[in-house]
Image 1 (cartoon, helix red, strand yellow):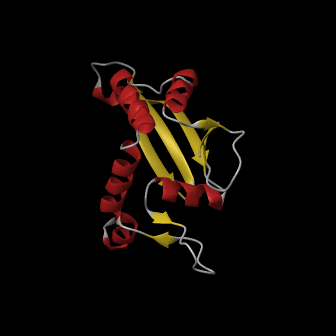
Image 2: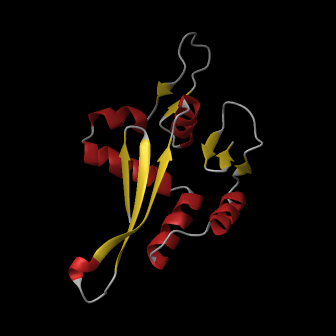
Length: 141
């Protein structure tokens, strides 16, 4: 599996061998694209990962970088990506989906992923407010 991010689009590629004994029989099995368009989703994701916060009492300032968010700017591209992976996988629901994908060599079903999301405190899309992060059909409030 390969996850690629470019121009606001996440692309997830799943590859498999058509013949386990032939190295060059690698073939694309599935390809999915995910687009993040809403800037509120990006800011909610940054807050969720602990990269920045909304300051109290600072007029005209929407968000400010904190902790690791500030250090990201001095890191290499690879270093930043490794930090993002660590920050994402430290959350149980993402860790479960990754572990299941790795162990089963495939993407978990939507039903299974949805059950994990609900058990980890994610809420259905009916939630309102600007402190909400949309993840497919689930939001982090």
